Length: 339
Image (cartoon, rainbow, N blue to C red; front, side, top):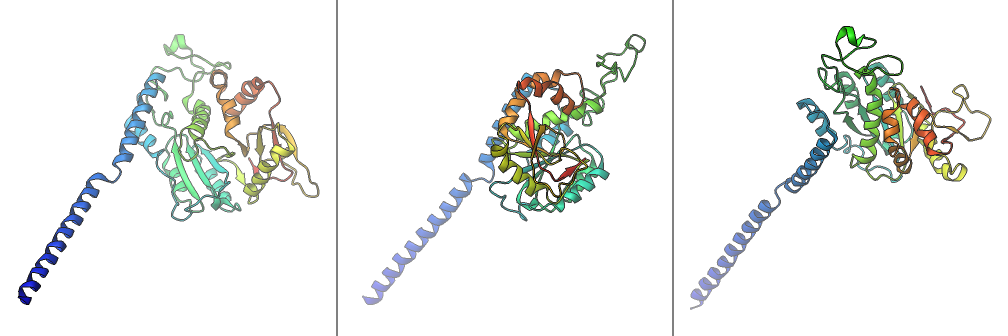
């Protein structure tokens, strides 16, 4: 009888174990089925893509080619080097470097940025006016901070044979439209549209809209963002000086729209005197916040219809004056960036 009782107990134990194992297996299968990697994220991406496509149709944008679509997808990729710098500083100032196709200049500014004190605390966004392999390789070699690349998907360099690039019947430079039987509208200087030149202004406007309103890394960012170009040289003190200027701006110059890294006089080095200067907005190492961007964005019509291909001249000539009051920027005595 004792032997039978032992056998019965053993059978009950085995049945419990088998049922438990089956339950665990069913649970694992269920979890795998319901948590397919990336499925929910894919649904969100598809929904967002549909919104973007419908918005593009309303704007009557040119039809994207395959390369343009690839670049637009790259723009949504996360920053690199997050394994090296997993966390950004709480009050970091994002740096945006906008570039064209001058690798010799880009190498210099990247090298200067690598020596900037505090650079590893922030995010560097490199905005490209088109895709150029040598430029891309230089940026891919950056290891001193988190870095994200974005490419203008409607750059004329991406559409070499059609608008917004050059179409076969476009008038060029100072062509005589009657004799050449070409189409186009000359600017105030008598020059016909040159896509490679006007793209400088278009890239700047696209970059601003994308950085402030299009990227999840910076969309809704309340702090300042610093903008520099590929032909600038950034001093090691630049980031710390900028942090100081930004913190002093609401106290020393509450009416200032921005902070600039370049001093009022590029020949001054700042030794022996302690002062801050408020003067007109500059185009070398300038930083402002989302509130200022919204004021600029509301002047999109003035910016786009002003007949000049320079973004900075356009801002000085038509956008800033439309604000109704002087547009000052705060500068320090020391040089932190030069052109």
